Amino acid sequence: MEYIKDFAEYLGKITGIDSEYIRLAILTILIFFVFGVIKSIIKKIYSNLPVNDKKKFFRNRKIRIILTAISFILVFLLWGEKISGIITFISFISAGLTIAIREIIFNFFAGMYMNIKKPFEIEDRVEINGIKGDVIRMNPLSFEVLEIGERVYGEQSTGRIVHIPNSYIFTYTLKNYTKVFKYIWDEIKVDISLDVDIKKTEEILYEILFDNEILKEIPRKMEDAVDEAILEYRIYYNNLDPIIYIKIERSHIEMYLRYLVHPKKARDVQNEINMRIMEEYQKGNIDLYIND
Image (cartoon, rainbow, N blue to C red):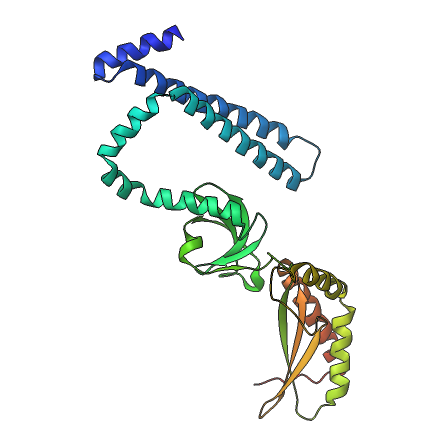
């Protein structure tokens, strides 16, 4: 500590700044440095633990938040009565400072709102300002999503991480695909000829839907989720089972296969259903309409 005090006094003579403020600034840097090293050590330890990645992530995140809070508390206690002097100094430059850090303040309070109201959480699939992805990290000033869609069909990951300011939560509409329910409605359109046996075709398509292993248990799970959410949200569904809608066009019939599916499994389900439809087409059981 004597070395720090001597060094602060030396810098004070050179810069003309009160050596006590320099000493406190040096100690503040040391506190953040030490806690940064501790976070790195804990991260290294957790990376080698024999637990799944999800538990590793959330445990490390919780400890990181706790250590960050402790470090700020120590800094606050360290500066003590000097804080009033700093506030007085800041008041002289408040106008310019407010303009400079307006976005930072906005993002910080938006982050507090997000932690209290929880419009989304880690692993939720969200869309905001045209950006769609799975939330992989939340910070005091921003959050990050693993982007899906855009250049990749089927709402699968593009491999890009998008950094989004927390303030977006107040300025843009947020779509959460998994907040209340884990499942969304998805549709596949199948075009068939006008002269087909519509009842037989419908029966085959229903069989394909109800044979799908992923879709089988979803209506029951969705019903349980609706029962849990009914007290907070005015949500109701008349039908949760897969259903087929028919639309007659001039040259063909359009059949819409509508079903509930988890957003992250939507493309796998689409692929399996389309494969089954093609198998039935090749067997001659379904007469698909091909528009040349």
